[in-house]
Length: 501
Image (cartoon, rainbow, N blue to C red; front, side):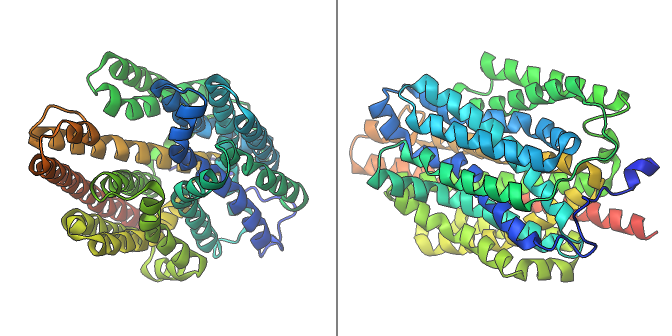
């Protein structure tokens, strides 16, 4: 990758000491608190679907938009939000994100119609995009290069904790309060984090003050939102349906136009030369496949636990928690960062993803034999992700000039959103295809098939068909993660050798 002399000069905030900001660990705690609320809202709404259907009279399409409005807006704006943070100031954008997220949570908690709730969720998505991009950018600015892997590891652990704790927190709140409480609980956290950001976080931005890339912002927002919508709509409407094909075509055309535009203007939002950097491309490809395997497998596993094993949503959430707990334990103690430092980034990513693949294979082959096999698989996935995921994020951020740290955070968030959505869609489609080919009745889902079953023997065959589909899907996911680890590790190794030469 070639950069100009101005791009090579890192942009350090005025308040940052050579050894890192003196209050950097306290600031990281504040940033992680903000991230936790954003990640929780990606999953917390799922457990409230029965309450929303009953109390707001929400139709199936309303429920889908309540869930998807947040992720669509957030994923569509990540790159734009990162670029805005670099230009106008990361502290300003972080504070704006917290304010928008808090206001959106208030409107969502007090909503008395499905339209109000969908609009509030979209507003929360705007705040979430600003938060997810600026948090990682600020962390890169205030920590020394030696401390960055540990700081990113803690950030990744909080992400995993929020992802796993969403259903648990939602279930607890719904057992004691009405559905609006799952949003109102965000407000005191957002206010506390906003005060701490104003007092503690130093301002930093790109000193060159690049001109705003308005057309690039519009194209990236439309293209990414269309791509994510096509991915999440495919399993429900069919991959060959007009809606999905049209949305996918819009995504391809708009993103191609975005890439062309970015390669032609003097101040691009994303420098297309990044993709010539083996470190960057290796980290991005590996990041997609890590989230592909973990997001897709958790989606399928929770269905298996509820539909086949008969667990309630809260029980299923508790039984998948060991995955997140392993990530939290290994990253908060610094163990994962030490392992990654000893192994080196390429080997840490390759080995971590190989361990994740082993965990997916263990669940695929042993889940039907009881919880012990599932527990082993979750522990292996958590261990591998604890080592590989922070190393991947650090590789992405280190391949981008410091003055573009906000864009780097946006790319990192986009990778996670895209990989998770793709994992759920692809592995879910494989499961449904295998299931439909094996069941003795005409149905498109497990509950529908069980309702049509004639006797216990036929129900047993239907459950066996679902387990067979789960095994096939998880094995495909394991293979994808393993190959991704090999490719990412090889590209990063070649990049290191090139740097040495």
